[in-house]
Image (cartoon, rainbow, N blue to C red; front, side, top):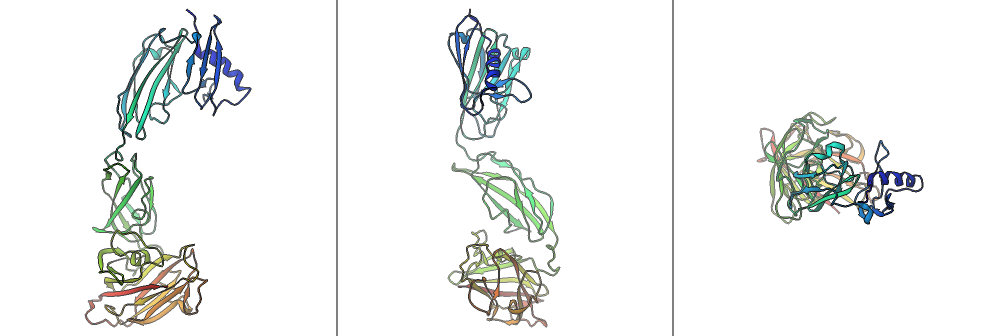
Length: 443
């Protein structure tokens, strides 16, 4: 019987090759000769040979041995039991053993499986003689191979198996969201989750029981965890997430509750942050939504119905009616001018509504400061009556002098308040709470 210690010869040849040329990242073929002058050829996969960190051992994946000097599985046996099917993201059990005095066994097969580190030692010495169990998880749908190759002084033995994970909806079907119990207005907080196989995840939010837009959560479909969420309005939010891929079905999160407090940085304490809003463009019936975040112009003019796709600045042409404007409070709606994409001639204007105007007059301004009604020049307008343009704006390259110039990339506030002394419109108000409409128009 011709014998070969594959591990020993690989060490000897590998040590010489290491000083001659790089071995990682390219297929390597080793031509070995036994003491009985028989040949054994060892060929790696395209990963080549790599030095095991902290030692002098070389490791390789996908090794095939050919030649009469390689020994064979008849010298001793290695066996592996792999379930034929698997579920991506769910662990399954793999049992394997070497039935005789193996001195070393190595994991082999498809890279990327948790619990089956391909190319590393599975056992060494006397520990190889007992049965072994591994909990293995495949990351995605597909077919995965698993094998163990064991060696001793008489040769080698390999046991192999295959597990197939079919295409399926994201897993698990129900999962938890991890979010802080409390947060502050204007301060980002993380929300994380663990789902495999998703191509899109859609977030939903409710504020004090009603559907709400939540920046960083409801305006993206990225399946990547975590997300950074920035609430603009105080209140109790309930967050859920639905994840999908090309297979029918979905994974649905349980709800996470976050209590948000604060008033949002330097904004005035008398800033109204939510209102019941009816959206209407000039060619469609009104769509009304309760408890809308009115701290951003995106929320006020960027939608025509709850949950529809945001239309960014210069927003939808049309008007909104605030169903419960507390005229003792101001409206300070933040907006950021897009850094690019607006035409060089872009202009727009906001009008105090002629019907359901709420109050006879309002003060308006566009300022970089929340609640600032005196930014100076054309960027402020006092006692704007119903039907009148309250604030006109333009980008720097647009023509005209009767416009407040807004700079791309800069953040501003559209500030609105009831003109003092407050004069209520007949039929629009009750105890200082008014229905008030505002129009958005642009070229």
